[in-house]
Length: 387
Image (cartoon, rainbow, N blue to C red; front, side, top):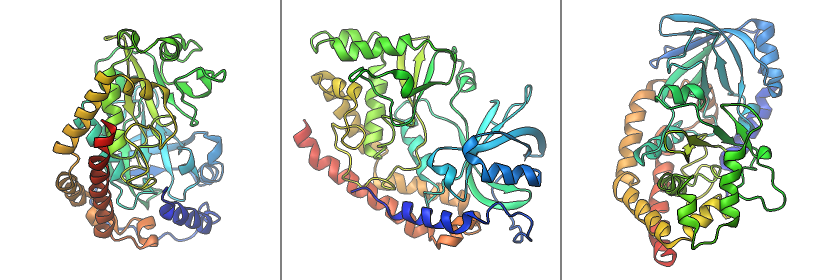
């Protein structure tokens, strides 16, 4: 059962306040004292009005990004897809040449996490992927002001782009983003990879490395598949990405909202997780995603082919069990939520969206932990059949 509770609340809240959100001429509420590091965005009145009311254009407006005793001229636009319509919007900041973000990149994301009343799901998910050995974005909780008006707690996030690779001393190989719910791994039906994958580096029309991988997925029989696929895919990475995604019901992470990097050092593709705010039971319930099915029941051809090979399937089960014995336990996730709570608690109830919805952090965390408990039990019960 797909969970609609928070989506309905968010849409209602967005519709209620949206007409007035661009009116910045009235007297703002008193600015609370903020314990988190503060990002203050300074934007002209007309530019801010245009930015908010014409968010769908994804055009940059001029701003000043002030953080950690520094001020930098920059560009700002609204970030996201569905989240673009939210009252508490997410933003992408683009720095001019010669200026780098706190993460040593020329862009930075301020993600609002408006759907998530704990504000924790994204970073908890990043932590699990990192524990599994995947590359992940760096992040920091910050308080965001726009023209000195407190907009709430955001996650300041490192984008996945060429600077992400540079900062990890990786060559600039092809980095693709799965998008528009059309990132498929099969040419069935005349599929064109350009309809579901966007190039984030080496931005040209040459998708041949990805197309070669999909050709192998579509045509090579099981008897020859391991030898062929391991030439161009980091299978261990793909199995770990799938295992963590299944644990946290990252249903959005197989046809959309993931990055796929052709690593020039290994010559193999690998998954990099992205956009994880709907995890841990927020969008999908604990029993919505089967162990052998990516994307909540819709077939992902790559993952299905991998799990059709007994050796890969057994390794996938080992990874699931290892994660459930170590990091995906109720006690470990609770410990991580407690550490995050220490960071955000003083500012949590000053977040305008949190205060408007009347969220109580302890109750929201209990719902998240209840998901972990039920998801673990679901997987344990279904592993016997899956084997």
